[in-house]
Amino acid sequence: MKAKLLEGKILAGGIKEDLTKEIEGLKAKYGKAPKLCALQVGDNPSSAVYLKAQSNVSSKLGIDYEIKTLPAGIKEEEFFSVIRELNADDSVNGIIIQLPLPKGIDSKKAVSLLDPLKDAEGMHPANLGKVLLGDLSIAPCTAMASFKLIESTGIDIYGKEAVVIGHSDIVGKPIALMLLNKFATTTVCHIATGEKGLLPEHVKRAEVLVVAVGRAGIVKGEWVKEGAVVIDIGINKIGDKIVGDVEFDAASERASYITPVPGGVGPLTVTMLMKNTVEAFKLQRTKG
Image (cartoon, rainbow, N blue to C red; front, top):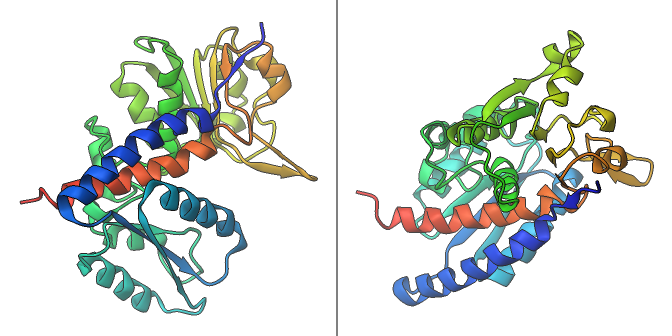
């Protein structure tokens, strides 16, 4: 069996079409487009590709977009003051803080300072709390992209064995909650699982497997259960190649669906950022 590819670009296309129509309607109703502001500290090459993608997609959808670049040596309180200013700026509907931030700036505190209704990446504690309750109106972008790809298979995950490898706040924990809310029997693996040598046995029973570690080939293809849905979020550079966390070729011979790397979760993540921005725009007009 050769797995079907879950290409984020294809799924993103349909969502973008819907968003374009919705944004046109919002412009007609309110006389303005949603606006997203990206906060960048210093010149961070690792953020450049993501920022370019944000700019391209927002332009095509009709979302106003601004990159606010701050000096690399900015003090923490100065940075927090900029966040407060953007919170108070009615022309800005969505804010994304480009990570990582320089040493000396607490990224968790920075995200917590965002107005939850302007948190375009869905990482404010209030929005993470909503995910716990099954409210995905503004949810973490990469986790939501992964969840959408799982849904796109049409497979009913009720009661299925789901395994998430990686327990980060931005991906692992929220996708685990999303799966739990759909009644998947969900296991979360992390560094301690690997240290105990238990990773293979968890992977081997996973009917839905989500991997977000950032270590090339940490999941061996031979471990993948026949017919599993495999969502590989890892991005790793090996020589001149970009590869995921799962041994793609071997896993493709066993899985029913698998995301390519690149081209899987990534293209859909930016679309989820735009979707959150549009949702934020609407929520800001109905609050109170």
